[in-house]
Amino acid sequence: RGVGPTMLRAAGLSGSQLSSYETLKSLVRDSGLLEEGPRLHLGCSLASGLIAQTVIQPVDTARSVVMSHGGDGASARRVVLDGIRTEGASRFLYRGYVTACCRQGPIMPIQMPLVEQLRRQLGLGYF
Image 1 (cartoon, rainbow, N blue to C red):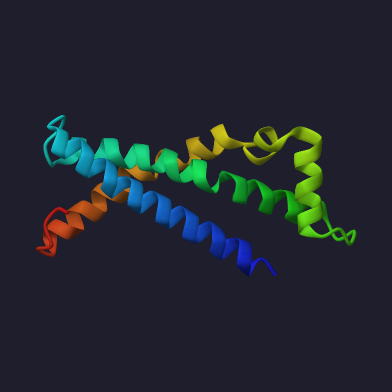
Image 2 (cartoon, rainbow, N blue to C red):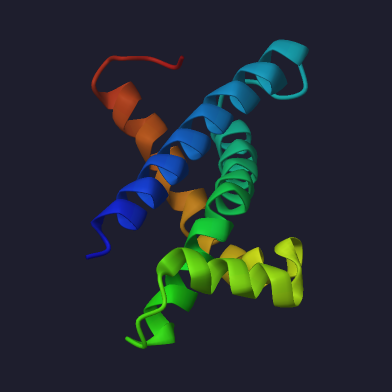
């Protein structure tokens, strides 16, 4: 139980985070706003973290609500649809968004610049 939602979350998080980081980095660098380096990596990593959290928040919220609902026999789909009907889609699915962004915030300025340094040390260069 729970493997499907966890895999969906991981795919959404990784896909949105990595693709937005690389895309933003290329756009900012190519526009001449920042040169390749720590400031570029830090800024793009923070933005990609915000984008990734925005993408996966509905999955996180639905998963949390379903897990906390208990075993009264209601399907996961029914629990989520009832929540959306009661509170509205945006309010229900983005419940706890600010808190989640605060949790994600400290991770990103460490993770992606670290990946960039690892690339450099392995001789892969910047992409």
